[in-house]
Length: 123
Ligand SMILES: [Fe+2]
Image 1: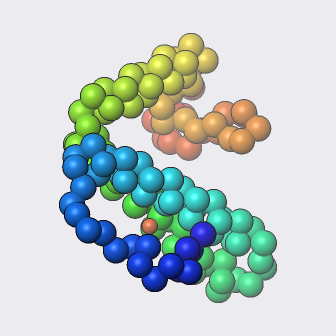
Image 2 (image 1 turned 180 degrees about the vertical axis):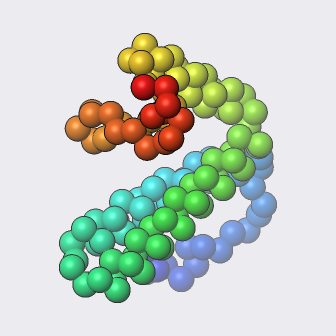
């Protein structure tokens, strides 16, 4: 949520160290995720078609921002990037255990839904 009560809150007196920058980027990512959550709630809460379209578009732009910031974080902190890739590999193993290919998607209720032509050929 905005915190505009203090007009000097955004002012800084010095540059950040690399460690502080990495922490700031994590905070930025959290802000983007919160924005996605809020925009999505607003899309769900209205039947006004134009509002749904505009807000959903903004929500999706925030998702792109998450991707940009995550990429920046991986560049600035390669050790953290290794952990991200380790987590990704763990999920890929779980998918393999479940017999789900990466091109398949899983619905919120856990049911598999086939989205790609390639997965249809393999099934
Ligand atoms: Fe954003």
